[in-house]
Structures are given as C-alpha cells and as structure tokens.
Amino acid sequence: MKKNLLSLILLVVGAYSFAADGPVFSGVFNSTLTVGAGTEALPDFYWGLEEYANLRLKKQLGDHGSVYMAFNLIAASGVSALALQTSPFGFSGSVNPEDSTNSNYAAAMELERLYVHLTGKKIAFDSGLMRLAFGYGNVFSPNDYFNPRNPLYPDARQRAVLGANFIVYLTDMSRLQFFGVAPKDPFRINGEGLSGGLVAENHWNKISAQGFYSIEAAQKIAHNFGLSLKADLPVGIIADILWTYRQEESASIEGLAASGGLDYTFSIATHTVYILAEYLYNGDESKMTGYANHHYLYGAARFSVDDYMSFTLGALAGFENFSVVPLLSFSTDLFQGAALTLQAQVPCGDGELGAGATNNYFAFTTKLSVKL
Image (cartoon, rainbow, N blue to C red; front, side, top):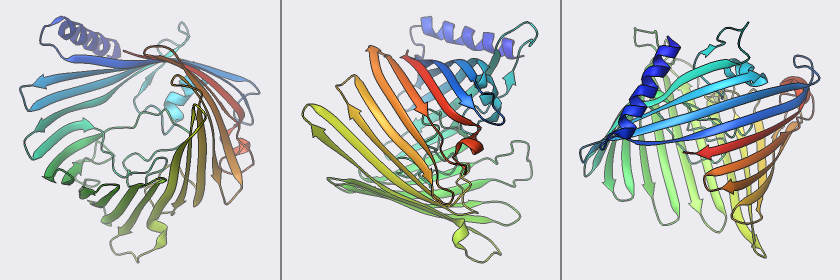
C-alpha cells in the first residue's frame, strides 16, 4: 500500500512539474548522522542514520485561491529508526520496517500538509490539514498548544491539524481569526474532542498583542484563555500566557502555562552576537505536553563569524531537580542552498533532563541540509 501511494505521489509530482501551468515545487533534503554514548536503556555506544525529504507543492487557483500539499519521506537505521516511533516531537506517521530480514533500513512516509487557501480583500479562509500557530514565544509559546515547541528538538517540523480557519482583516494592523479543529482521536464520531476558538490580534509601531480563547468539547468542557505580547524595543521582550479551566472544577493555577523572555542583538567588531533567554512555568493541567515539571529556563548565544558561519551555545535547565542539557552547535553554508550543522548535547544530572532520564550522556549529530 505504501509503495503504491509513493508511486502515485511521484507520478503526480512528475506530471505537474513538466506541465506549463503546473504547481510550484520546493523542498528540503536532510542527511543526518547521530552517534552517542548511552546509559541504561541505550548501549554504551549507539548510532543512527536518517535520510529525510520534505517535498512541497503549491498550485494557484485563479487569482484568489491556492492548494498546498507537503509530505515527508524518511529512510532510517539505528537509533534514528527507533526515534520515528518514540519521539513525541519527531515523526507522527506510521513506520514500515520493510522486510527486516533483507533490508537494513526502516522506511516511513507522512502526509504533512494538504489544504486550500482562499483570499479576498478583507478575508481569508483555509481548510484542510494545516499548521495553526499562535503566540509570539521564541522557545516555548504556551498559546501554540496544538503542538508546543521544545528546544531539545529545534529541527522538528511542527505538526499540522485537520480543521478550518477564517480570518477577517479589520485594518492593516488588526485582525480577527476564527478556527475549528478536529479531535486528536481521528476515529471519534460523537464530537468529543472538537475544539474551536477566536484570536484577536493588533500590531502597533513596536508592540504586538494577541488575545486567545478556545473551547473543547469533552465530558468536562475546557475553556482556554490566552494572551501573548511582543515588544520590539532595543531589547526584544515577549510574554505568553495560557490558562485552562475545566467546567465544574474550581479555578486552579495548575491549568496555567506561562513563558517570558528577551532577546538582544549586538555587534563585536565585524561579528554579530545574538542572545536569547526564556523562562517557562508549566502547570500540571496545562497544555504543554512533553514537560513533566513546573519550572524551566532556556538560554542561548549565537556568534556569527560572517554571513555563512556561526556558533551557538545554549542550555535547557529544569529547576526542581537541577538537571540541564547543554547544547553546542556549529553551522556553515557549504554553497548556495546547502548547509552543514554539527551539534552536541550533554545531559547533566539525574533529573528529568539528566543523563539517567534521557538514557544518554552524550549525543553528537551532523546534518547536511539542501534546499530544493
């Protein structure tokens, strides 16, 4: 079935690519090698190899519409093959190990985006499998609760949701956004898990504000209230708050997720330095999946040697158990459209982020990325 679907996709891509009025084709190809030293569940030495392609199509529909499609193709071995099934921030499709007795890789394919976009003078409408992103946070962004980000997985492609989105542009600087999203369990037919909401957004000269409300259908209806602020001053400042209240339950801080941070760019001689710091409070009943504790702090500094080469040193720390994951990366453009990235992670401590909890005490990855 997967081979037939892949053949159909390649046939459609090929046919449209040679058509005069065919869609715009683009994509990204990544080749990633991972080596590391593990503890407990992982062996003393482990490795993984992944070949990944994200292919995208855009077809114009007259003057006011477009259709977008994107899909992922992956071949992996070692720890990278295991990550396809276990990482909550990696791949969400099914994994096919092919014939494990005669093949040295696991193959995976995923439909990532499939939606139509219609525009008018003061309105826009989207329907299908698409990315719905809210909030201004650079690292955590609690308002982006359909798929919260995690700095430990900086390259993860944000998951899409199946739904609809209607935008009304009140002025050049303000808009109202109405959205509806299908349940997380695609086989639910009784409406439980459906969610919908409203977002109001306005931009001033150096300040932006976004108000958020959504409601989720469940045995105990959940109401989500959010506010996100961004100020582009000499120092960039962001604040992102989302509070969840379930019907028939007393109001509690456990439903709160809040982040705040700052970023700043300055020059040293001919070089550019960018620094970023962001704090997260995560309540037990919040929407921030993937975070087990309450308090987190992320900090990073990127030093740009020139327009093509940079070094980044960052760290994610958990306060309750004093565990931390330092991250060091080096990136350089090899030629136009191709970049090489080297990254090392060294979990420290025995808490949630430490070596004992993550089952590794060293991980090194090298990734070649090519834009199509």
